[in-house]
Image 1 (tube, rainbow, N blue to C red):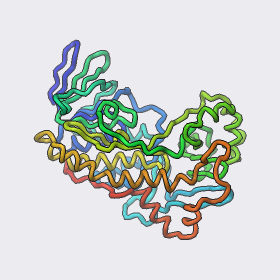
Image 2 (cartoon, one colour):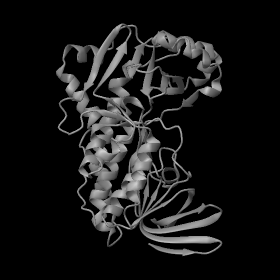
Image 3 (spheres, rainbow, N blue to C red):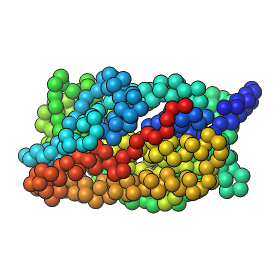
Image 4 (cartoon, rainbow, N blue to C red):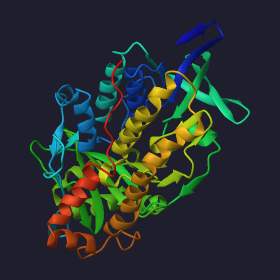
Length: 410
């Protein structure tokens, strides 16, 4: 990496500039650097200590970590494990995904705070001399020559920043700079839900199903001392829910989990609740000359199944497998960038269809209705045909076309 710095502007010349230090960006940066590609990852925040929701590390990601020789160290971090996904719906409990038959070494979902996962990846990146991580660096503009992207302009700690690279990899999320500035056409699929996120204290040893449905829908993520909870609402109805006041939300959640009733009294202020407007979309084309979008920048996912972070990791592995040998010596041409999209497009489409069609029946379609009173058809089938749980376990746990790191360390 060439680095020219003065009081007004810092200029970096590198093989690959990754915009975004989330799961897709950091994993891509680490794998490229491990393969001998000079890579600079820029991240607008100064640390990872934010209230992430994607804390589910699925068997597909654990297998990648195993193949890299990192999984034992990773699993020494504080975490909880889930061997199957259980749904409570009214008085019924149904196992919707069974991971016990997966052809991998770690057949469970590990719940690890995302800031710990990102910090772990960053420490791995620092082992490689070709890896540079720049926190507090904000990308503002693509540097272009004709239609080709040559790098990014931005700023960092009061100084202008210019990164020149063979390839810019956009991994800065669904509303990030590269997606907005790329000019690439998109397709909005629509989402069956928005989500109200909040926390409640957790009692020691307390266990809950990941999903509770019936008169409403509640996702419960065990974070040790507290529950990270997501109350699903019909899309665009946040203002209607808020107009009813926090006590109405307390009643709705207590109906689903009566054990929360007393703890919900502390949820007395909308400032303690965050609304996530869910979007499910994808770019029709993930690339243009000199630019490739991956992860949420290429395909925004619903929280359903917790698959977003793991799909992003799969994108990162495929990107490194296909482009690392090229980036060491030259700029990838469009056909090589398109190979990444071709490789990852089908898994994206199938996963989004699973989220928006098959799972949509689990959620309320209106504020008044608040969910189905009877067990939805997909859950009835899963209860009746146990073998289907292995199929859903494979779809959730491994996804479609799981990736394996192929580039040897250099």
